Image 1: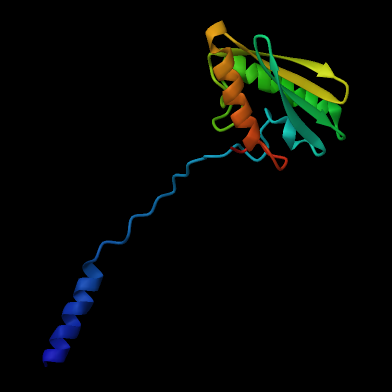
Image 2 (image 1 turned 180 degrees about the vertical axis):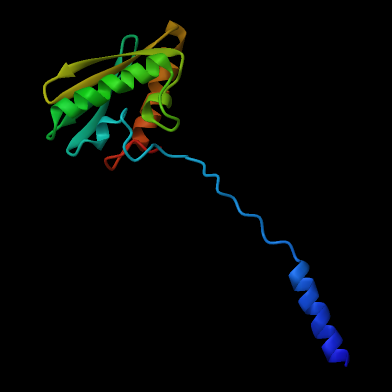
Length: 142
């Protein structure tokens, strides 16, 4: 009888237990798979960084689709200047105290960030070099 009562108590306790909470919310911590602001997604594209007199430049050169690199670099500059790109995109990862411009170059595109304040040039250059060091493997995921 004791075993039966004990078994019934265990069964009742199990039935009354609340299920573990579940969550369907997700948090995106990396760039989208097809980030329209990421020239590095274009196969055959590489990146180099150059300091400029008023900021820093990212140089995207490709053996692939140069037109796609141009389009993505233009989108990158626009997203940075308007601060309206998708969360996690490359266009939203650069310091907001700068403005962007881009130009076509042989085999790719040049993306420049210009510091809004001359006192911020060295910091901007350092920040972008640090970010660029994380951009590898055909992705702009940080």
